[in-house]
Length: 485
Image (cartoon, rainbow, N blue to C red; front, side, top):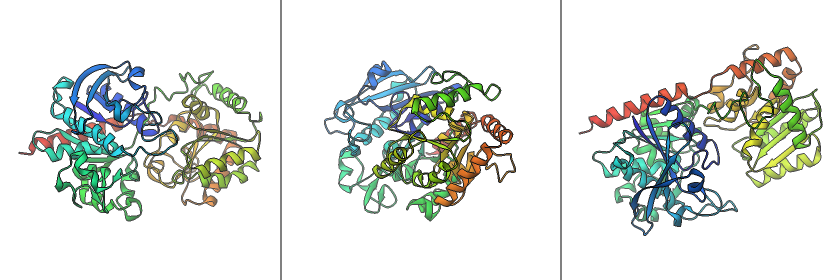
């Protein structure tokens, strides 16, 4: 099949979170199955040079607002997938991140920036000779790409099949009604049956309405968002879409995330040769200024520091585990209050708590390798990748039973020593603390902890199965599209 993936980011060119990892890893897995995959994403500042991209074709002015655009092409990586960078310097060549300025404020014209991405995708899909042949499926990711499915539906005849993946329902792409003429939406789009959502235009809703298939990133999250508690106003629509909505568990890129060959580690290791993990632990302590001790575990967190991620629950449990001699490592940034709380904890416990603000890819690998237990205490989590990275690196995770965390981690106590981590139910400090203390108990039993590590490392979290599910969905959607007169 010929598949056009449309997303606002993809590694190695731009990453703010798991979306970028998923887009690239899924594309690689589909190529391995014999499909031809192109990823369309914006040409943010510096991406053309990093990719070594060269001009491919002109798009004219897709929105008719004086913003000429063109596409440049390059290999996405060494997998055989291609990246097409959408160049429109007036909208994308800016300092800061892909969604906002250096101070963290959203760009005020994000409605135009990502409408252009989506409209370009639809335009390319309908004139797909530019990609060397007809496109079978357009797969749009999150609200930034969702309008691609809407444009193709609004324009009608002869379109390819469409799939829309919700990576996090809470990011809805909402803008005032007044933007509709600028993005080229028909007047009929302003309707509860289309993209209107409580008096605003929601790009995410457009994808939920118009895509032939809607997926989200774990089976449990697919169930949760069809409830009033988890659906944040979209649950009725998602229930109405019925079997068109599926939960497909994300995988991870097991080539990039492999302790046996990770260039960020000084000594590689695997389940059969664990000595390198002990070296990684000592090296991490030296790097972050932690006291050299082996009698109590090092807990790691690599996360956005937000309420959703349950960082306040983790911080609430910190005094109890520090009293047991444990150490804590945090890498991330986010809400100012949570950032400050982490920094204050580090100041209060020098040599025991280390905090690094921002994101450092290589350091994150060293944290997964050098810690003993890993925290993902999210209040809700569509899938989560960090718990899978942690298990891959022999670092049992502590998670709340929600979304993809529930689908990937088995509690070692509840399964009578057959688990891969520790799971708690309620989003409370007490429940989180109890799980952290249970994990310390397991760490202090060397035989049990070693077996727990081996089981965690033995779990398969690659894309093989999930890529097959996506391909079946693509075939279903394409078959439905062919039946449309």
